[in-house]
Length: 175
Image 1 (cartoon, one colour):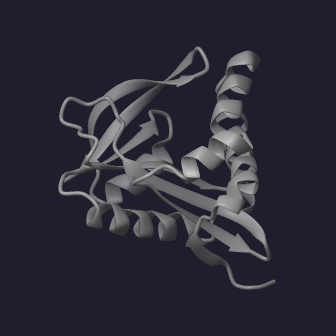
Image 2 (tube, one colour):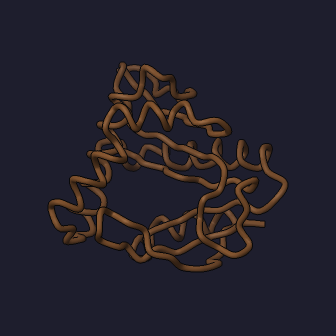
């Protein structure tokens, strides 16, 4: 087994990146946290978020950055940051948001999440003159503790759509 490489994502990563995102979402929120998403809502969300075409569009979105952790040609984790889109009265599009930080079940505990978080925060700080933002599911206390350790504080709440289902999310801000 070779060393894990963290690198910028490329357009040709769209399909494996989408597959990783889809499986990690299921492992984390459906299997792990047991959120009872209705099947049609979950399918609609997963298709819109992780099918190759929407993933390719997201990879090419201006002002965004993507990184992947790869070992032996397999994607293990990824992070995505870009212009803020969280619904908070103080939030502006020119502020930066950590949009996704996903680590596959098989790569949990390898420190990849922390490495990708640090890389993302450095990039976000360099590309924003305002606060940094993160949306996190209200029940994901492990992620909330991690973000708090990096200076984020709860700034609000909102409902995140998974199809017609709504997840209760916290809005975190640093700066």
